[in-house]
Length: 192
Image 1 (cartoon, rainbow, N blue to C red):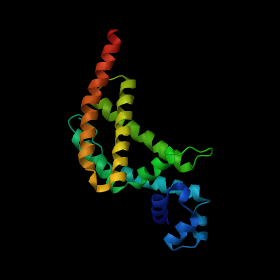
Image 2 (cartoon, helix red, strand yellow):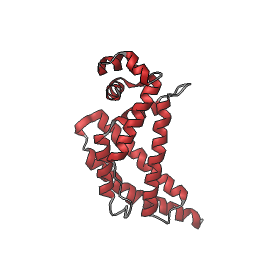
Image 3 (cartoon, rainbow, N blue to C red):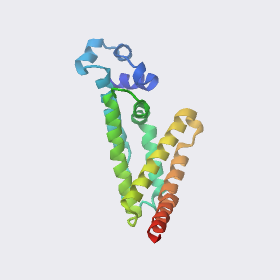
Image 4 (cartoon, one colour):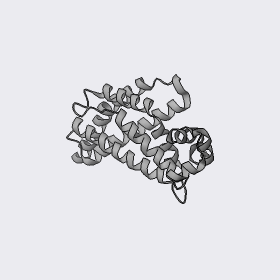
């Protein structure tokens, strides 16, 4: 049932997904879906939660020597997003929509992003312990924002995008130039 819901939501987005379409795709009566979920919102939230759990199990970020292992970090992120793209694909769509009443899947996605931000902040702190908390937050936010852009490029251009190479480059920039720039900016602001 969740596989069918994931497929339909990936194709049609939140607004285009209906219980009837998921029922048809899953080969189940709609009552079976309503037995599990009160409504579409609850079903999509379950899809995002499950796809986040799958994504978490596919990513294995190194926890030490972040600068030395930047290429490895890039490969791990690219691999995780290749093997489990639904979390990011569905979550980004929900996160970008502005509604009076937000779907609960959006909150699940944003909470998952906050967890991911914390993981990257830890890597940045390990790579540059001299960075201020603001600097760590800035670099971690930059890392996630860049990853979002690479993911969107892959969604638009498909296999024409060398996903792994771009993530390796991005990780090298984050754990090299980005940290150095923020450190230099912090040093300059304290010297004033």
